[in-house]
Length: 85
Image (cartoon, rainbow, N blue to C red):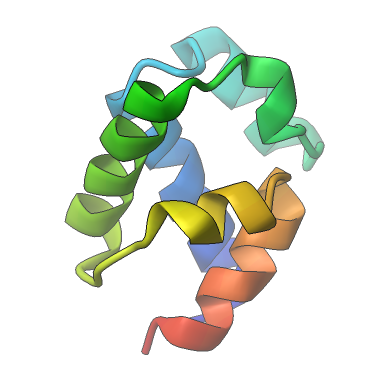
């Protein structure tokens, strides 16, 4: 999967898990901006919700460690683009 496709999937998962508002997602998407996942105050329960949303969107299992280790939108998109066919 291409990085820009993975990025769009991550934004969709952020919306599904209610970690970013639709307006924020639209702003990040149109501007191509990056966001630190740390800035979203994601606690352990939210990480699991985000994993589930990503799994639904991408169709692959996502480990919480992948989100914690790749804690920005661009870093996570690059990482997942390498994993997702």
